[in-house]
Image 1 (tube, rainbow, N blue to C red):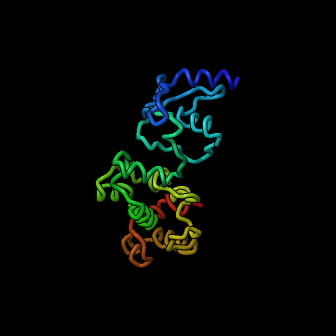
Image 2: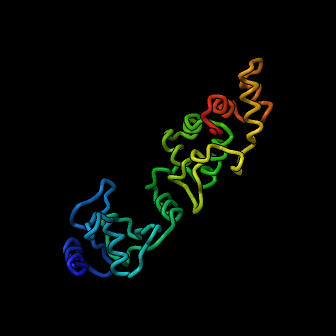
Image 3: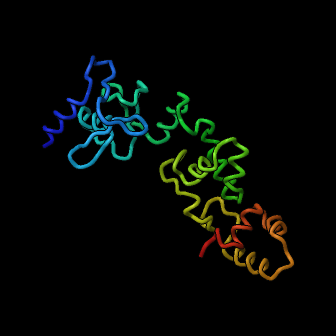
Length: 208
């Protein structure tokens, strides 16, 4: 079966010189990468090529193009890289959707979001879409190994950026429910953003 798929795969390539692009001639994804059925499922053609010719299984690593040709499957034009390598490579070539960001800005976004600023406010300030900010916060882009989504952690007291504790959160909710204090007043007193107080009293953050 593997030999059959090997022949099918080669038949779908425009194999040229050793240093030339070997373009995929069949189905392409929406992003322009070749797609190939390996006998079990659809895979990216260039990843299949790398594993086939290099004898290395990429695992969670990315397969990057030296030639910037998404249809190219020449193993000499492919190399392994981490997510950060992938982002940095794309940004250096001006082809990444997050090209307006840097690693420093991404970390600043996460810090400010954890402190209570809204994704919409950050997006407007940085001139990007709210969905771009959410992708950064959720670790879908500009992530590093071991990064855990801020949204999934609910900004609990175990978070390295947390300024509050569960005792303080309970106190905030009790005082706000009792009346006589505004969200702005609580934010100033506890040293967090108004949005964070708003999320706490509405049970959108620090969810038990």
